[in-house]
Image (cartoon, rainbow, N blue to C red; front, side, top):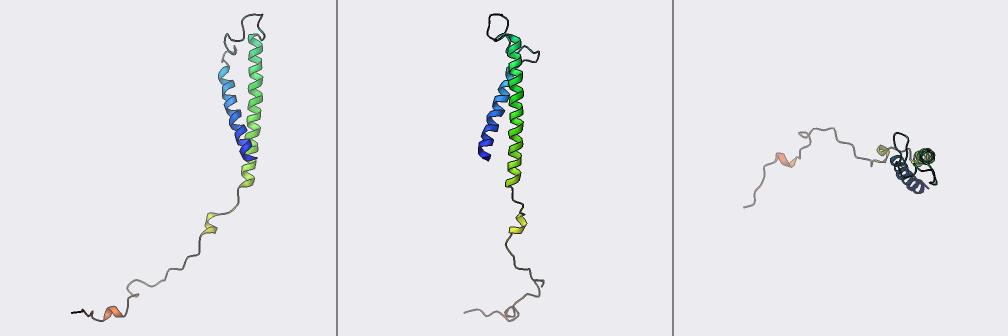
Length: 113
């Protein structure tokens, strides 16, 4: 379910970017592609309205899917700490290295001849 929503979210993001890029800042959407003549199927104003509506619907869907992904991600996270999974270690001895010498080291070393 999470992977499907993630794929839908990516597709919506790309589609939303495309819709925003098609719009013009001054309100004349698609430049001269859709408007100008009265004989065309959609006039410039209706193309702008269609792009504005499509952008709003796509943005709302993107927002809803993003919220759903956030809720799903929050529900699947385990509340465990990595510190609880550490292996048990042996305690370090509190003796100093000078006290921890062998008795054999105080005897003279015999060399083999």
